[in-house]
Each structure stands twice: as C-alpha cells, then as structure tokens.
Amino acid sequence: MYKPVIGLEVHAQLSTKTKLFCSCSTEHENLPPNTNVCPICMGFPGVLPVVNKKAVEYAIKAGLALNCEISNYSKFDRKNYFYPDLPKGYQISQYDLPLCRNGYIDLYVDGEIKRVRIKRIHLEEDAGKLLHIGSGDRLSESDYSLVDFNRAGIPLIEIVTEPDINSPKEARLFLQELRLILRYLGISSGDMEKGSLRCDANISIQTEEGKFGTRTEIKNVNSFFSLEKALEYEIERQIEILKRGEEVIQETRHWDEKNQKTVSLRSKEEAEDYRYFPEPDLPPLMVTEEMKNKLKSEIPELPAKRRERYLALELSPVDVEILVSDKDLSDFFDKALRIYGNAKNLHSWLSVEILSYLNENKLEFKDLDIDSERFVKLIEMVDKNEITRPVAKEVLRRYLTKKEDPLVIIEREGLRVVSDTSYLQDIIKNVISNNSKAVEDWKKGKKQVINFLVGQVMKETRGRASLDVVKNLLEEELNKL
Amino acid sequence: MERRDFKEQLKKTAHLARLHLTPEEEELFTKQLQNILDYFKKLQELDTSNVEPMAHVLPLYNIWREDEVKESISQEEAFKNAPEIEDLGFKIPRIMKREE
Image 1 (tube, rainbow over the protein chains, first blue to last red):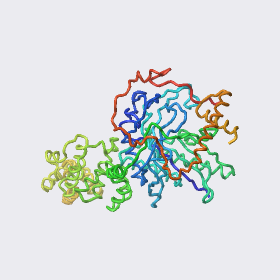
Image 2 (image 1 turned 135 degrees about the horizontal axis):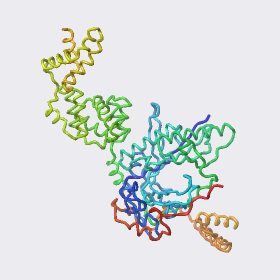
Image 3 (image 1 turned 90 degrees about the horizontal axis):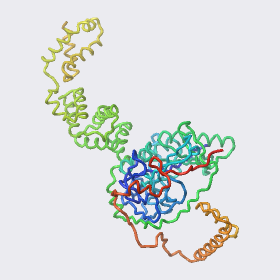
Image 4 (image 1 turned 60 degrees about the horizontal axis):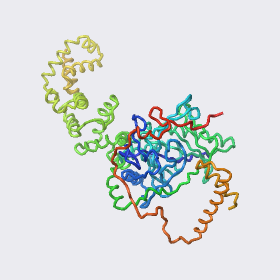
C-alpha cells in the first residue's frame, strides 16, 4: 500500500497595527523599503523587546477557535540561525511552552467528517524581505541582495498539525477552513498571494500500517491550488522511488511553480540545530481564566456552527458554502433573515442579484453599502406583486451603484406594478399594430413569437407589468384577430 | 565524554555561531567547555523532582504593551550604520555560493 501522510505548518500574519516586539507599524505592502523600522526590529544591540498584548490575545483566540488547550504558562525562546533577513541572528519564537496545544479542525471531505489534529500554535516574529539582484532569478545566480526590514517583526502564529492528512485535497480543504476561521476571528487577512498566509507541507508515504516513511518538506507553496498540485507531484515522486526499491531522501524541496514540480533545495541535508534557549529579555506569559473567558466571549459564531444552522434552514450544501465562505455576506444574510423568514428566497436574491453584481464589478461584499431593511423591503414588494422582479433588479442596481434609496426611486418614478387592464390593453394594441410581421408569423403557427411581443409590451411598461398578465392579455387580443 | 568529543562539539558550536577559532583557541575553549559541562553534570545530580521548572529569573509576568503605533527613527537614521545602501535597501554580499 502507498498511503500519503501529510502534516502542515502554517504561518499566518496577525493583523495587529504594530509589530510583535516594537511599536512600528505593520504596514509593509507598497511601501518604500525600510520605512517602518526601528532599532528593535532591525536588531540593534542593547535594545529590549516588549510584547504586543493584542498579538498574544489573537494567538489565544486562534487556539480557542481551533479547540486547543491554552497554556496558562508560556514563554518565548530564541531560535538561533544566520540569514540576512533575520537581523538579530535569532528569531524570537516559542519552543517548548507554546501558547496553545492539542486542538483540531473537523473537515467535511466527500461527505464525511475528517478530523485533523492541531499539535500546537505559537507566536513568533516574521523576518525581513530579501530582493536578489543579479543575472538569474535563482538565489545562487544573484550577485548581491537588498534587505528590507519593513516585514521584520510582524507577528505570526505558526500552526502545526499532526500528520493526520492523507490526500492533497484534504490538505487544501484544511488550509481553506483554517483561513476561513482566521478571517471569522478577524485576526489575519489570510491572503496567500500577498504572503500573509504561508504553508509548508511535510509528506511521506506509508507502505505498511504503523510504519512511517521518510518525509520531505515542501516549501514555497503560495496558493491553495499549488499546495494541492505540489503534494500530488511529491506523492507520485516518492511512490516512484519506492517502487524502484530505492529510498526517499529526507530533504527540503522547493515547489517550482513555473515547471509544476518540486526540486531539491538543499543538496546536503544539514541537521537543523537552532540551539533554542529561553528569551531572557521577555518575561513569561500567564494566561488567566479571566483572560481566556473574555477572549472566548469575543469569538463570533464560527463557520462550522454557521454551516449547521444554514443546513437546518434547508439550504443546499452549495448555497450554504456560498454564504459561509464570506463572513460579511453571511452576516448580512443573518441580519436580513431576522426580518424576512424565507431563507431560500433570500439566498436566491443574494446570489442572483448581489453576487452577480459583485462579480461583474470585481467587488467584495464588504465593499457594499447595503441596508438589510431596504433590501428585504424590496424583496417583499416583489413577493406581494407590488413591483416586478425586473423593476426590483434595476432599482437594486441603482441603489448599489448610486446609493439611491430604492423605495424613493420606486415612488418617484411610479414603478409599482401596473394592474390597470385597459392601460395594458392600449399598449398591447399598439404593439400588435406596430409589429405586423411578428403577428403574421404568429398566425402562421409560430407560437414562440409571443415571447417577442411580450418583450415589446414589457418595454413599453418599463417592466412594470406582470409577465403572466401581459401574456394572457396578449393572447386574448391575438385570438381576436 | 572523551576529550576528543568535546573538541568536536566545540568545533560544531563554533561553526553554528560562525566563529573562526585558531588551534590555540580551540585547545583553550575545549578545556573551558569541558569545565562548564562538568559543572552542569554535577548540578544534574541534584534531586529536582519537587522543584517547579523556571523560565525566567524575575517574578514578572505579562509585561506587554498596547497595540498603538509610535513614531520611530527616520529612514536616514536607520541607514546610518549601513556600509552600503541601494534603492532604500541594505546592500549585502551574495548569500549563496555559485553553483559550479
């Protein structure tokens, strides 16, 4: 048997305003290099770090949301290694006493619950950014590098799973669910393209129960898609090696996005020796019950709970996922649901009218300024046949783009449904006399022409008439001919 | 531990810390390292089963700051100690050896 065994190490930048150990701003995108820096995050000798309370709280929140035990006693350690993006020569991290341990996420994989255990979550600081200058795009081909410390010191949580994942798809689902939870908590943007969420994967192949294979570590995975692709490639590579009767070498491999394969990063595997020791400049952390309870009370309803609630409303799993995957959209849905009982209809309005608008305009729901009461009022008017759906759609668009109150537009422009039969009959007569060709066709038996004529009538009424009414009246008139 | 092992350990530690030692220093530090490790060996003989592990010498906890941005040094000041600057980045020598 060849069973993939996968564990993930995920780094998420916390969305605090300031860095982990100094009061420099965490802004680092589209900024000139080395603007948000200070002696602490540039590693000057003699400076003293002071931990950001919010970062500690965010890490604990992550732990609580991922069903972890929160350590009541935790400390920081120095992880020693040399690399130019790490100005102090060590990274302040947590070694043996992380803030959170022993959690899990339950995933739905092909209709079944798959539990992935979380081994630990700890706080640590991000490194700076290197820009390699030279002939090729590989590090070994560069002539020199430029260092930017804007990112150095930004708080990260590292989330380490147990090797419970058994397929590339499960790995992707885990990472997506993790990101969703972090977003619900509001503690990380989780943007993989921008590097605020990074994922390394450890992977080995089990050939018999209870016996682990040699693992490799895959780095440089920067999208959900490439995580899945990289793991698929690596699983195949390792199985090929085992089938040949050879052995997998323990090494770090780099996902080469351009060529869609993993390549060996370090030809000679040096045993990592970080010589961790307690950070003497930072007193330990004591997490009290009071603190834990306060943070627990700030945690919003999480995706799993929301899914359950929506499924109970008899929304389809696909529809549920549309809502749950965007917290702002889902919050809006809940708000509207409080004043409008029909969940399915509400969902259909959101997905048909709102999401299509967002897609066309490349917007996100949070960019919209939309009032749930006005939205619901509009739907109710359609339900009560006070306005037609096309009118509602048009008015809604105007509301979204120009912020005009839809109810005001409807009254001002007289957009309520026209039920005055004689008014409609006048329009129909006009349409019939202006479209003699279509009428001839209808008479010859091309009955579908009626749709064209209905369209003409609707145009005249500016969409204010009910389709069924128009169709009936039109048929009546045509039959008279 | 054999004396030779101490020397190996010293060399490894020196390499990890990127320290370049002369043969004389190696001799001297091997001896000192040996003394230190012997001392800790002695400490390890103590029965500590009833002693709480300690991570820090001071009885301080939760010394933290609020998440508020504060003015820092200017970029000019930040660059003051840098031997070379290019495009607002600290210029550093090539990181990896060229592949042969």
